[in-house]
Image (cartoon, rainbow, N blue to C red; front, side, top):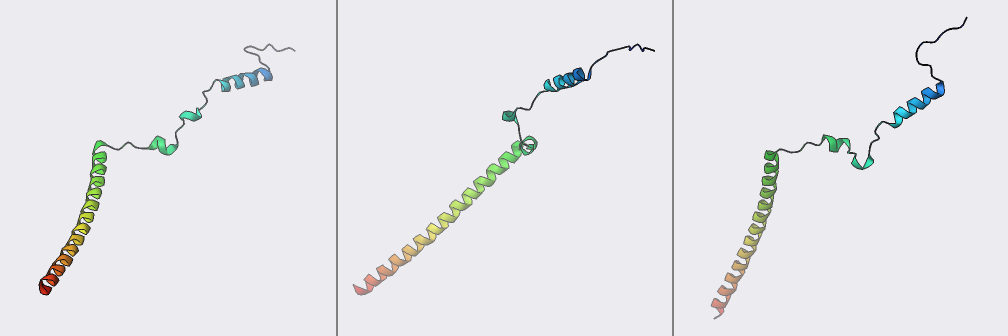
Amino acid sequence: MKRLAVGLMTTPEYNEWCVRRISDNTPKSNQENCQSVEEYLWVVPSELEIIRQYFERRNTDLEKKIEQMEEEKMSLRLDIDVQKLETEKREKQG
């Protein structure tokens, strides 16, 4: 007894070709435009955060300048003390 197949009849080769063709049509990832997960999840800081970071950097810079000026001040005081001693020495000699 012969059976009558109703519907689409395909060969295994056709099925394999069809699967390959469908796979070929899927977009491939472009390596040039790929981002790492860290970059993708990177959060852009808010305007307030950017301003806070700016002021922290500025504050650090100013603290360094103050420290340098205090060192210069100490050095100048030592120079003044040396000059006073030399002046006193000359006055005693003269």
